[in-house]
Image (tube, rainbow, N blue to C red; front, side, top):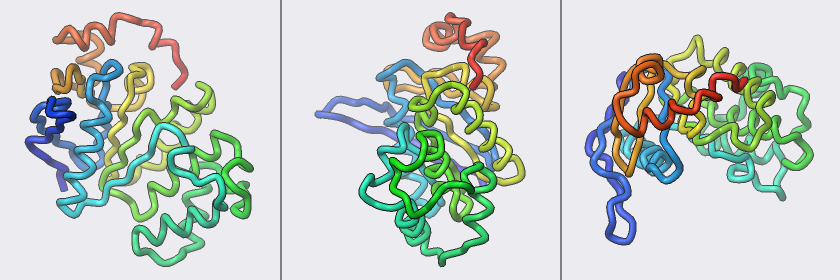
Length: 227
């Protein structure tokens, strides 16, 4: 079923930081939300999550850093149990095994606390938690910015493979055009709290229509990044 919300908006101290915005995402679609820092990307992402959850849709969120999702004083097993409980799902060893294998973290010791795992494994664990219950939409907000480029690319490759046979849609929020260019079918460009461009990825990259999109595309070094 299509994910669709109209009139998303947000204000801060009486000032609009997200002007009324409509978003439509098809099942299994890969969409990038790009723009400069402060353009309103994360604000739109959070507003979309809240609106879709109000509609009863299953939306999962992966933050920028695993530090935002993992309590350093709790074991990884505790975090996994909490994630299952949040979805009202019974413990399922097979489900966990399949997700860990897909994201190549099956060697991780669940008895350890987050700092006992590498940063890359921590972020893959957070992604695995987000995928419990097969969400309608996975929202990833700068998901690789805390990782080195090689680990980031490997993580996204594994996620691409996992999602390829599922109807979970992906919204990738990033200022990294190189990451978006390689991972999504469609780009949404934000500027000043407004959605100023919405087109197929290659169309935006080859013929950007707005100043914001042209500015993002002007720095061609994103072509060389491994993500």
